Length: 195
Figure 1 (spheres, rainbow, N blue to C red):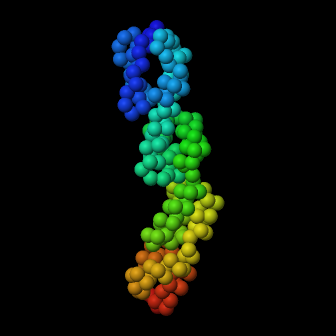
Figure 2 (cartoon, rainbow, N blue to C red; figure 1 turned 90 degrees about the vertical axis):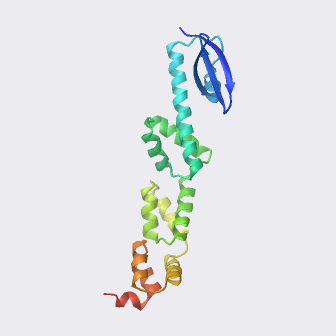
Figure 3 (cartoon, one colour; figure 1 turned 30 degrees about the vertical axis):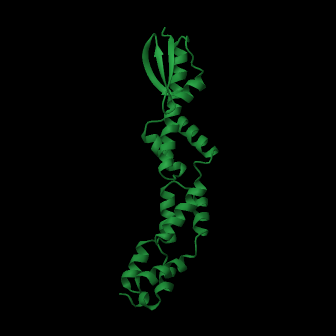
């Protein structure tokens, strides 16, 4: 059975592990702490399985943290990312729960910010709903996020003020998910006269 003969701290929160006097592998320091790995310890099969489990946990958390550090994501998006990376369902759920508990993943906050961003970029309610649902946000949370936005009619009028009234603007509003009522009110007679 291999014996741990050395643990050397490296930069970046990593530890070099030596087995029987030879470098074995580099692992995150928190894995060494959680598994209570120590010099002189014999690594029998059950202990190696425990170490492998903790390494998978650390990789899952690291993958998730890197993803949310780039941009906020819904829990469903993050789950799909972890699934693509090959993590098991139980480990994905554990990782998501951990990030939700500490506030790094919050579907309600994500939905509110995403809806606001899409609204500011000229999208209507239907397009915003569709995008949030595509991102895996639940129906009630989507409805709450859309309800928090300025009225769709008001946003449509802003688009018309910026682009000018015309059939092209009407088409653009419809393409961007604005409702018929909002388009008609923002453009008035132009819509009614369009072929």
